[in-house]
Length: 524
Ligand SMILES: Nc1ncnc2c1ncn2[C@@H]1O[C@H](COP(=O)(O)OP(=O)(O)OP(=O)(O)O)[C@@H](O)[C@H]1O
Image (tube, rainbow, N blue to C red; front, side, top):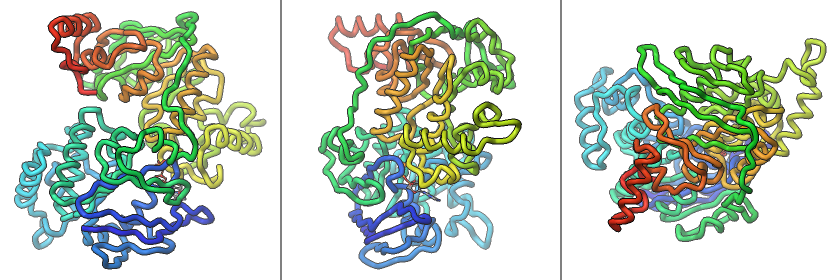
């Protein structure tokens, strides 16, 4: 199926998010959309999926003009969308989720789960999805939940699939698997619109790339265009894709985690006897496949976990047993892994979000009332410093694009004197130009003498930022290695080998001449 957008314009008040966009997605092609945060990619996809009606312009499917008054119309025209935040009911099975809302799977108003199961098995077999129709969605890893979303679209006969930053939440392995699935879907004639900030992925999978900047198409590029050229097209200036930071000059070890164990309600150890310390002026990155204890480690530091054994000290003061506000009060800046649930209050303004836990302090509070002019002044400064693309700081935070929401969280957390900065997935959903800035800003925090802990599943980010790297596997610390360690070594540790075992394995592979770049560890 061929899709054409002609002169699509979408405005929010005076902001023109899409400005006369022309785009043709040929049948059986993967067409990637690249653009900096706030460029208008998601808005365009929401127009295409019937969630927004365009202010002007036309959508054509197989050369026939169509108009959508909601996603049901888009689906009926063969367009499916997988959102970054899945639309699944966790306590339902895969089949129940797929059947929900699909008319062809109900009979006389009753869900026909038998047919749905059969269809899921057929699709799974055809594309190698490996999805069990009877599994509960809440028990499935993120990558498999995403496949359920793709199956939902395919069951509804989607011939054009919109994937809006699908890899942002995936492990490297799940990303590879998704790329394979996308290739198979293309070969079976499905067209895909793919949005990602990861240029390597875009280059690897696309047939065509269209670049959008400030709401307008600025050009298209073949997939063999270099990453530096693509980055420059997106941002409108040359982007330095490597950080080139100076070596750390660590001071006193002020942040210490000793024998930390975190358990769930049934006593299962999610983090098992982890000890590490971070010095002032040093960045420790925590690497590992998502779900190996990283979330529990940061939650334990923040005071968000009930069942914690061991000790966490900052400047010699115990943090275990303290409330979240006491921990923040002691000088901890924290960027949570899920900005929408834990980092922002979407209904509050950007300006308010920029002082979320500081509103009782001077200069934002004066004699018990909010000092609106100080809050406004701060927002103007932060919006400019962190290049937050917003119409006005008075707008609600949920109207910001995903990457710009992330910048608000970082701007807030980095805007006060810190004794510890701890950030999970600090640049998730952020464009290459802004990553360049944020990485420099994090290194500046280190150089100002703050101990920094970065938790990231992006190995590129870990290798860019880290002075030392700690690897977690199944809740246990596999070792702490220098920041300049090889991907192969880290891959082996991420698969459960200790630093010593991983080094030995690499050495013996080297001697026998059998070494592959990633050994037998996690694919990176
Ligand atoms: N519901 C809304 N109300 C007001 N403004 C909005 C709304 N949705 C999006 N915008 C604005 O439209 C512009 C484009 O946002 P969009 O989400 O399309 O960007 P994007 O290219 O997808 O960015 P990112 O890469 O950060 O996800 C932004 O300036 C955003 O603030």
